[in-house]
Length: 244
Image (cartoon, rainbow, N blue to C red):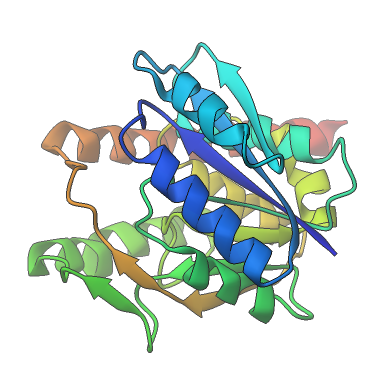
């Protein structure tokens, strides 16, 4: 069984080398047949040069250089690229090493008879360092998650943890239908899995926040707007499908 891991990277020159070396070393120790596909998106630093340097000693690393920024776009392009080869499991992980290789390995081990496994920070046995502020927890529990359940009918304890893994048939079904290039692309991905009847397992992971990302107020408004944009776009698709 071969595993393809997509790593979206936007200006990650200071972190991508450590991430790639850690993941390659771990997968080789575990004797996992693998590849890593770094999808650079809208990079304006020297991330490309760093990846090329690491690639010289790690032939299982591939890269795609996109001029346009967007994590959702990068994952979708990576999915389609992985499907051109004989990969059995296809997933993605963030480039910042918030989720280390041992946690991602849990997804591989526990996917079992499920169609996919998604990392979760909010199930029992998960650990998050440092702990999230209470205000973020309240916003998630009382507002954001209920809204997602209302709009899309999906209910998980964690929608946007940066590691997910799917069996090949899942990616084959959803890759061409992913439209969200930045915000809430995880929601669209999980909604499509529900639409096509795929069953996913939430897996506890250890998350170490690197502390370099900042979630600003206008990011929250963008996510709020994107949720409704996604809902309306899926409603239009469903109407078109029924008429067809």
